[in-house]
Length: 269
Image (cartoon, rainbow, N blue to C red; front, side):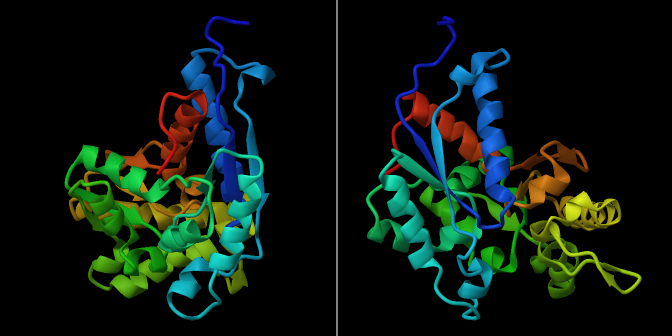
């Protein structure tokens, strides 16, 4: 065994399918965090164990928060219960689903990582004014401000919805790139959730709109930007825009998950 190889102590559980591409990206981030920990290219045997329970039939979380879709808690709780059989803790690969996190916890036993609170804590390290690109449900239900309170940090989150003409900006620059329809010439190109980033034309339009949204938040004083929907980093990456850093909750969660799996961080409460 290489002296730098980790002896993993816990199994990671992932609730996926909440945006079919999102949990795949979380897995990629776990791979990347493992290699970062090792300081070298990893062998097959170097990675931690993890299990995915994909539940794509879960009702849309944003619509559920608006009373326009069924309660997603039964689906989420069922997925977590399945993971309890094989994993030591769980990550829910969806920001909006964290609005229902406490209800899910009441129905399950396995500890669940609070990805949103961890991200709010990370965001506060960059300043007290942070941009937020997220679904309308996440913004309107104040998921990130409430998570900052749980993490006992102070940070003001600014979303396109908070700017002048906010409803139109939120729809055109955030909601449509995520869900669709992104249209050009009357043709529906879909959105990130439907895999439209694989279409070159749709890719450029989606990236352009999200970049526009991010730059408006920078102009409004954002010192960092949280990509608060798990699909958005697929389009914008994890670098910076307008000179401010982009914070990906999936990367934050992956970092914590690898530390927990290694025994360097306690299980979530």
